[in-house]
Amino acid sequence: MSKEIDLDTQPSGKRLPWFLTITGLLTIGGLIAMPFLAGEPDGDKMPDMVRFLGRFHPVILHLPIGIFSLILLQEMLGMLSREKSPRSILPIFVGAGSAVVAVVAGFMLYHGGGYEGNELAEDHLWSGLGFACAAVVTMIVRAWSLAPVASQAFYRVLLFGSVGVMGFASHGGASMTHGSDYLTAYAPDPIRKAIGLEPKQKKEDDVKAKPLEEQVVFADIVQPILNKRCVECHKEGKSKGKLRMDTFEMLVKGGKEGSAIEPGSAQDSNIVIRPELPEDDEEHMPPDGKKGMEEHELAVVKWWLDEGGDPAKKVGELKLTDEIRTAIGKLDLGIGARVVAVQKVVSDLPTDDLRATVAKLGVDFPGGLNFESQSSANLTFTGVSQRKNLTDELFTKLSPVIPKMVAVDLSATSITDTSIAKLAAATDLRMVRLSETGITDASMDTLVKLKKLESVNLYGTKVTDVGVKKLIALTNLKRLYLWQTAVTPEAIAEIKKALPAVEIVTGI
Image (cartoon, rainbow, N blue to C red; front, side):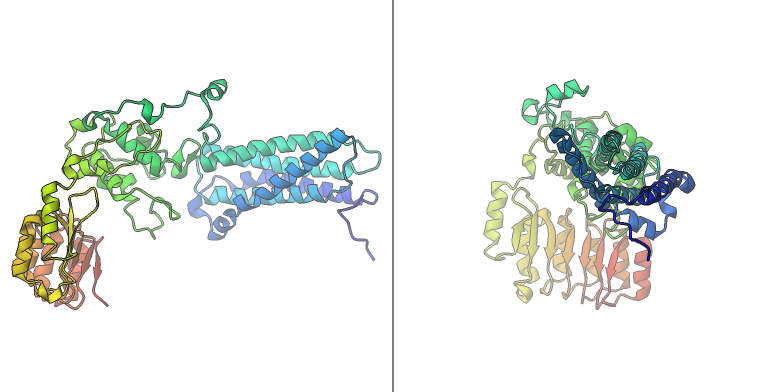
């Protein structure tokens, strides 16, 4: 019978050291050859299995880090107490083996994860390979140093060196994940000065606020939005898709898909196109359920781009609409932003007269008329609770506040085309529900004038192809409900062709 190799005890003769030596040297050769044999990384060509296994790298890497840290601590305590180290090769064997597995997984992640051209990722790859090779060499030396008369000095030198390389590789990985400034972001100024960094920016309370019109649009408003939503994954040391978004110059330079911005055209700019894709689209940004730009933030970025995308112009030099003024007023630029505070847009707050009018109308429309938010003068209206009691005559009482309406729900009420004609005054209307009402194609002539409409519900109405086709002019339309109407599949196909982004619900 052959004798089993026991890694927990002193090796018998030289069988185990020779076995580990040959196996270890072959492993080191394979690790060094791996990058050269694989060539340049190209995530688009990698099989899904490579990408799948690569994602385990952040999980596996903690095992060798923990093991080598414990071994180092054990050796240091042994040196201080002048006691011999425990005579076992098992810990270093597991540590070196897990280091090799972590590096192979990291290599798969590097080739399948879109890190092409990322210098920090490349440095991290080679430092990780260096640690794995050093770990294997340390294991080999440990195996030979277990002889009763063998010196531990060389083994300890290699162990300390391996841990040093491990620390360097770990720092590179942390910099890729959190950014190169992760450790120094909150360092006090004396420490920053000692390591050659610029002093921290002053806190918001120490900086004098600027009037809205004097703020530089890109530096004071747009860049803080990008810093908050995008820069975490697109900055120096962590530029996914080879794209950096931490400076205007880097936005212009772009990444794998070209320039990130197209000054003068928001619709052709990648920083707008990608966030507006459906969330289940592989190209949608940000990925993995991370919170992207909110509607008002995206509106400000698009406004800046459509106004020319000039990095030097101030707010007062661009056309500032009430809509954009309101969007800027909603921004939360956070600590460290160059702008201290965005002026409150008083004109957007409900006036006392408007509040009084809404309160008075509450008698005829209990619970139906409400402000969009506490800081907005926009109104929403629903007549669902009144249903058939809501007639054209009653709806007329809402005329004074119709211009302030942004959402209207008239489902299952008695209103007709006469009431819909009054909605022409609601120029900011974004949503209207007219399901199961007596409206006809005549109401489409009113709706087509409301250019901000995003959602129209015509379920169970008498509208036909003739009327619905007019809605093709609504370029902001996102959802159209045509279930149980007289609209034909041919008309639906025509609308879909003209407005491919619109979701048309037909109940089929």
